[in-house]
Length: 491
Image (tube, rainbow, N blue to C red; front, side, top):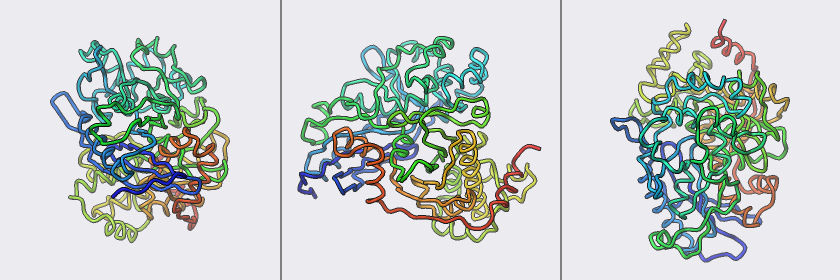
C-alpha cells in the first residue's frame, strides 16, 4: 500500500547488510520525524566450496534489488536516495571489463592463517600500527591481499571494490572506495585520511587496484536505467555514499547529548570504544589491541573488536534454535560470574561446536564447566559484559577521555540481560537504543547530504527526540567483576 508523499518529509532507502542477513529499510526524515520501515529482509548464507568459504554476493545483490522494489512500493515508486552499508574488510575483484572474478572470500576463511607473521617480517607490527592505527585481526584486508598474492584472480584483477562499493557499482556503473570502510583495510593513514602509501609500497600492494576515495555524503552515482526498470522506481534516484562500514553508520546514530560517552555497537560483533578527534597510535594502544577507524566529519572510531553475540548465535544453531526469550529467562537465574571466558579470543572466531569450545575454555582455566544451555548462555553474557567493561575502561585510560555513560546500539539492545550486565560491569548507566542504529545512521547521512538535517549534533538530537531508548542503572559493586577478570588475566 503506497503512502501519499509529504512535501516536508523525504524517503531514503538504507541497504544494511550483516554477516547473516541483509535488509532494505525505508527511512522517512523531516524536521521532527525519523521513522524506519523494513521493506525487505533476506538471508546472507556463506557457501563452503572446495577452495574455501565464500560470500554468495549475487544472491545479496538480488536481495538488494528485491528490497528496492519493495521500498518503492511503499513510497509510491519514488525514493530520494539510496545508501549502502555492510560489514568490513572483504572485497570483490573485477577484470578489465568490469566483470567479477569469482565470489568474494569470507573473512572467516582460513586463507589468512599465519599470514600476519609474514607481513610483520617486512613491516614490524609496531611500525604497521604507527602507520595505520589498526588493531591486529587476522582477516584485515591487508592480510587477505598478502595471502592472495600470486593467485590467478589477483593476477587478472584490474579493480578491487569493498562489498558495499561493489554493490553500488552494480547499481550505478560508477566505482569508488568509501573512506570509513577503507579505513578497515589496514592501508589507510588515520592522520591524513588517505592511503598509507609507504605501507603499501613496502608490502608490494598495488593501491591502483582501489577506486578513488569517497567520503560519507558524497554522490556515488544514480541508479542505472536497467535497475530502475527492474525495481519499478521513478528516476532519477541518486546513490549517496554513507558510512559504508556498518559500524561507522551505527556510531553516527548514537543518541549522545555530549562528548563524554562510550559506545558499544552490538550484534555478531561487539565494537566498544570512543568517538575521538584524533587517532591514538601509542605502543600501549597497540598492545591493548585498539583500532583507529574513521568516522563522520573527521572523527576516529577508537574501539576494540569483541567476538560479540556470535558466541550465542553459534550456540543457538548447535542447539537447534531454541526459544531465545525462555533461554534468557533461565540464564538470568544462573549464579552470576560462575564461569567466564575471554570473549575476544580468536579461538572462538571459526564456526562450529561453540558450546563445546566454551566448556573447554572454562575447564582449561580451572572454572566450573557450564553444562546446560542456560549455564552456557549465562557464561557468554557475563563474558561479554566483562569484555565491554574492560574495553570501556581501557579506552578511557589510553585516550585520556573520561565518560559518564555507555550507549549500547544495535541488535544487542533487545537483550535486556546483556544491557543490565554491561551497566553492572562498567559501573556506569547504559542507554540502550536505537536497535536499528546502522540503518538510521545510513539514512541520516543521506538526509544530511540533501540538506534535510544539520551536523552530527543535530542528527543526534533528532534521534533523542524520535527513538525509543531504555536506561539501565548499575547494580552492586564492580569489585566482583574485577575478580572475574583476574581469572582470565595471565599470572
